[in-house]
Length: 397
Image (cartoon, rainbow, N blue to C red):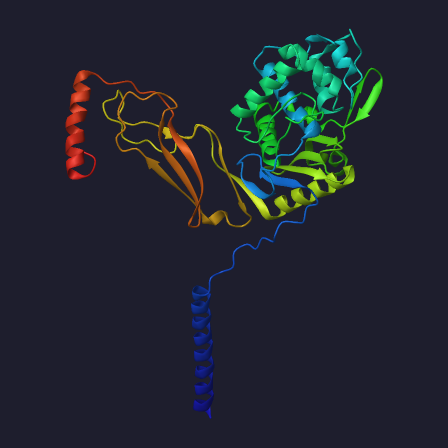
């Protein structure tokens, strides 16, 4: 009897051990499921895009390169050029602009400036962004470039500089013109520059109201009232263009930019934008991998005053990826093996490659974080000898 019980217990223990071994083997043999991401929501718009503002990664898009009339989304470039001139010190917020009859007579949405009055750049910038004032846009164009035609030429030069390859401007307002068009992708890129290049002016885009000449006007971006994380950017509408909205929102450390063009109503552009933003924040995250100026490596440099060169990236490196996949990220530094002085600060010396699993998801230039001059004659000759033997034996000498 006693032996029978002992044998039964041994059998049970053996079965438990066998079950554990089989379970572990199956766990290793069966691939673990990755984070599941559903298809993007159905968006009722002619064209749309969702992009991360830091990494620049496009999460979802539809007809994002289709050329469409931008309507008042045009004013993003008008405001950008004002902000650029402010940043360069060519104008100040307190500068006064005399309102011409041409600006005063401009049709469409207005800030309600009056002819022959003087209006500050600050008020005009608010009038462009919040009130979507065509009169304010023309006044700024005349002040900065002498007229709408030369200002439009300036807008197009900067569109080329910023890589807006499917954009053409004919005026500062967005009023219909056969040579005025843009795309959802280009509007997202322009918004990225506005946010990242001139953050000190970006707070204007979140203002809900602007009062000028005793007339209080609301920002037409309804999401500023509905979603506390939304803080910009611009609405647009004409009969030809339909309703458009460029929006941006920040939650935790992640900022997204969405663009919808060609929706059917003010309410529709707000709802469709909210769908895109909710999808992006729910299923993606943005991680900051490296800081601008951080030393990532110090490779050997030949013939210089110093033997090692500090290298890193010349801008912050961020990656946007599906949530819960950050453990799959890896990075590789590909640095030139023939670094020779002199080297100047900012010179490219290699490439930083970022992978998600086996997929390359980003490449960034590696640059010199310091300047290194040539060493003296003896140092250069000595390094030549060391380099010869280093190459001969396949390593440092």
